[in-house]
Image 1 (cartoon, one colour):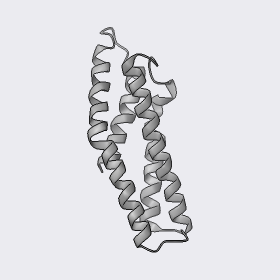
Image 2 (cartoon, one colour; image 1 turned 180 degrees about the horizontal axis):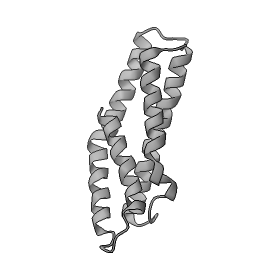
Image 3 (cartoon, one colour; image 1 turned 90 degrees about the horizontal axis):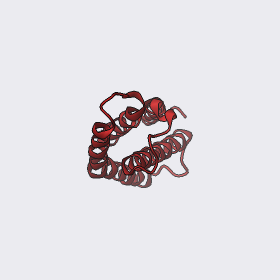
Image 4 (cartoon, one colour; image 1 turned 90 degrees about the vertical axis):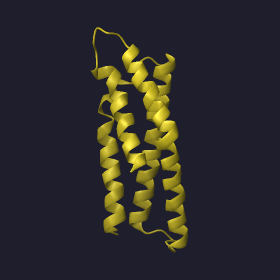
Length: 130
């Protein structure tokens, strides 16, 4: 839950610089990005690491080798989520440091691929379709 909640915050924050255009400048947005990155470092990243460790432990102790189709599909989706987390975090860090300006305009829709991938992970784990 902490990993997914943190990912939702990252996705929402990544879209913030593009969608929240106001006359008050970027100071408030940079403060929000700074707080979100601190929360990410303290909660989301450790939750992702714990999730990976527990998931790999379950795979090893559950005798799921060779992996079935649903497990391979789930692992690919979790790899994508982990990569998505890294891309969002890196982009927000660059924005905060002033090296990258605003995140790319495509990040305005960052929540959609995250939601689809997270839903796919949950469906693969609960239904084990193949």
